[in-house]
Image (cartoon, rainbow over all chains, first blue to last red; front, side):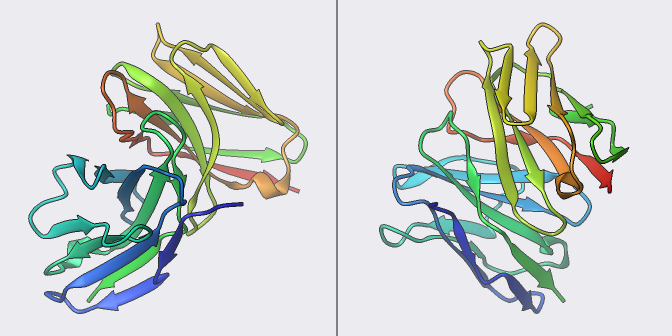
Length: 113
Length: 113
């Protein structure tokens, strides 16, 4: 069964460092997303990406964040200068259409120290 | 309160019993989805119900949607210990949508063998 894969599963980084979280969405999907979940809190939307551009973003997704789909398969989230409060589980998701079910990856646990 | 609020926050039942979780939301939706999350793991899509549907079944799952009350419920029948997880509702907004989901806080379900 097709699935969304994310790497790495865990990432520890020093405050101020740049991190890139990687995702391989399901191959025939057209809509891509990043969400995050701070420990013990709800899942929060960060950004959606369609037709090679950002279609929607949340207040959390400030200038420190960027997304890219560098080739036909990968979808990345970059945090330029990490802060302690960026520590969270980051989930990538993809959907065939914007109003169908979204399929989530297993997440990358980011710890900023 | 926020979009996608579940209750109860925690539910503890015995194997074989039914579990009912409720979700309320505030704005118009295109669809409402339920997800399961095992501890520290990714989100698994369970079921999607569209705004023009009132009830949907999938195996032991039954979802209802009442758009006049802006609420939904998820019923898991004949629960098993393996159903122990957190359950989240997530709403996709009405109108033009790129599929952004707004999640609730979730219900932690514990099924005792």
